[in-house]
Image 1 (cartoon, rainbow, N blue to C red):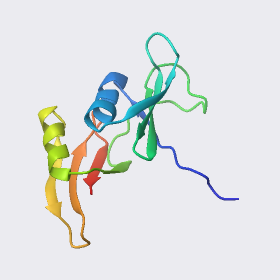
Image 2 (image 1 turned 90 degrees about the horizontal axis):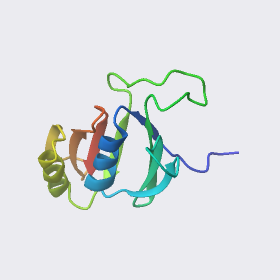
Image 3 (image 1 turned 45 degrees about the horizontal axis):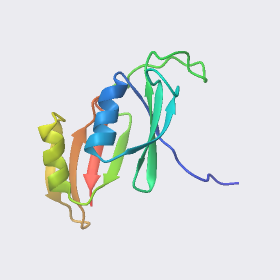
Image 4 (image 1 turned 120 degrees about the vertical axis):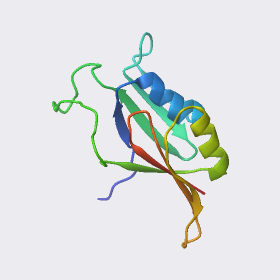
Length: 127
């Protein structure tokens, strides 16, 4: 038996800010929301061929019984393929996202930049 699909889920201190970052700024489209009405506790977004889940910290007990808390340090890094790294970085910068590494061509042929999302997670942008 092998895995069929990977669906990353991030816990966030501000679901609204995370939706703005991954949805509005990176083009994610909402595919699922829980609960259906009222303030959301969890939202799934489709970004191209991929999906990401965003869960609000403090929205209730987790199924796994472990405490939900913001990650600290370099715990995860997401790689997002975009049409234009430079344009995407400028759009994110204008929205207040910290740019960690300016766009630069890499020896392996990709153009890469790093930003952080609203919770401080590293996001590598590449084409």
